[in-house]
Image 1 (cartoon, helix red, strand yellow):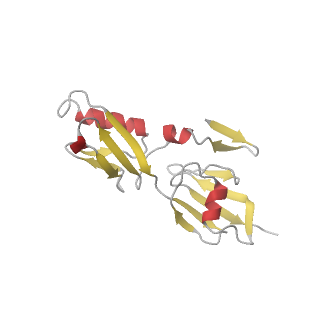
Image 2: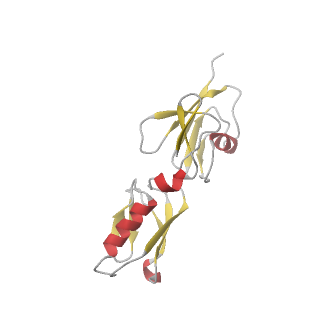
Image 3: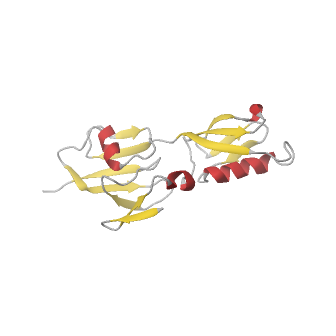
Length: 168
């Protein structure tokens, strides 16, 4: 669910992340092929957006949802390896987010589900004295647009948060 908050910028509901999240490099997933432990395991999505699975080889996971990846794996297994494969994919570790600008410790941080900008700033040591709390922008992974944010805007994996300097 996309919620429009005051100031005309989107805030994403936390429950929508799993459904709409596009997988990408750095995400770690657990693939379970039911009754096939040799085909199941934990896999890291590579820099090229591919996931290398036993028997079927590389499958493109770049930008697809968890459900779409399940479908792609099922299609790759059917009919040469399994007649009716049942596959489950879950994200174990999301790729990190980045925070830059007027915070004490800018850099890369591990993503935690439900994280808001205020949590990201806290991880980065807080705002500097020159930070503009109204001048926060987020660049979403896979999008070239900058979203104006507040302290309550939901952070997604791979986001780049920019905290601008205030001018007196």
